[in-house]
Length: 324
Ligand code: G3I
Image (cartoon, rainbow, N blue to C red; front, side):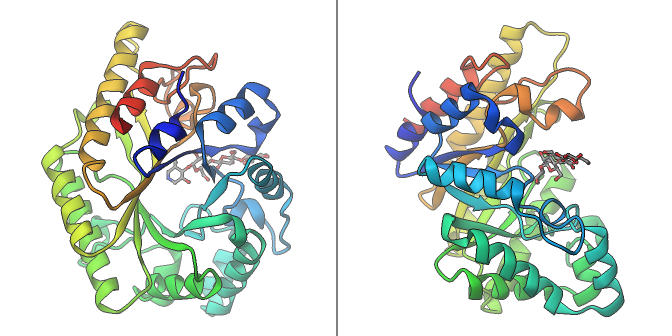
């Protein structure tokens, strides 16, 4: 089985995956990451609520992941500095009461200070889009409530000041399918990017999470193509950051399920990899045994390149072929 990262690099791309610190103890896991990946994303360990569940920061889990990356010559994606789902309670209440940006700067100084030398791309703001929240299509998250829309460019400036050579990423989901809601999400993202660019904010990359979902039909080629064209038109790079496929088609055979997952993966990558501003592709995990989708579905989802026994699945071949 050919390594995903060598196929990717033959296209000038990287291949990576999200890693849960807990799986570092599994030798099959370590072997597969070392063979297939040149970049890893901490699935949880670098998030604010993981690193600082209380005011004092504890870096143990993230240090384990960072030293694993260093030992194996892997760089990391900095996931993620600001996300409404990973703001610890103590920080949320501090923000709400005194709206002091120094709290944000302090967090960025600590995380970027400790791991920045290993991080090429920072997911500075994760999932800022929510068309149902109002005219500008932005989620009214804790940061928006404390600082207004400007929190996004302030975060980009704070991160850029601390990581001048890294890419500054806005990372988003729900952009792949042909529904009016996802069409609104694509539009809101493009409008945000245009506003940021017009204000000279240091955003240079868009993270497309690419959590594909067979229950939504097939990926909407025209919608994705149009969005990719507009992003390229703004001179921005693209990283595919969290690729996996929700299926849990219990009524079908394993072979059929795996074929449908492979087809959708290939369909999506064939569209986005036509664009030369794509930096690389990361899957959200490598083996079905540790997919977040297992906690979202009643049955074990089969939406990652390897099955639970670490056997490469048709999705693995689909990614290899898409890189060819
Ligand atoms: O490991 C700790 C355990 O020690 C502790 O006792 C327990 C108490 O809650 O938490 C455990 O951590 C869990 C962690 O996953 C383990 O990896 C957290 O509770 C749980 O919230 C966390 O869920 C992660 C979720 O983001 C929230 O951070 C998922 O693994 C992760 O797949 C998911 O990833 C997100 C991306 O960041 C953004 N895009 C969507 C994607 C899927 O939701």
